[in-house]
Image (cartoon, rainbow, N blue to C red; front, side):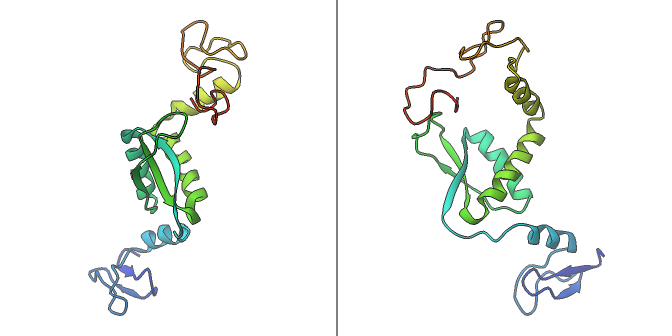
Amino acid sequence: MDDVKICPRCDAEYYAHVNTCRSCDVELVTPDELKRLKSVPRAEGALICIYEGDYDRISHLASALDSDGIDAKILKAPKAGCGGADFGLFVPETIARFAALKVDEAFNRLYPDLKEAEERLAGGQCPACGATLMEGYGECPDCGLNLGGGGCNDSGCGGGSCH
């Protein structure tokens, strides 16, 4: 099946050496690329932020989304959020849920230890050292890891859940 290319607009088939659809003047893709493109919902609407963070992390996530066929924009984020992030990962609103799921998948690929750390924290253990945590305490009693409890002066964050 590598001996053909397909127009993503009109689905016309061409020999593999042809690069552009004669009718649509669109770049041709392989059948596998076409499947991937058609699995991504149509991107329309205003851009909305699905993730905030430092540039390096946002850039890695944007690259991961790009490899999944999702066009994401990295934009300077207003420092209105509790974390005061500098950059945001923006996608069209019609694909925001789909893109957010892909970001979760990318996080699991880029940071495989993150899932284990989240499970430890949900189970009342320090994600770094595994010590038992006391409810409402802002740091681990053994290793001193800041767990984000209290101390936030942002009235919109709900008391540290975003740290």
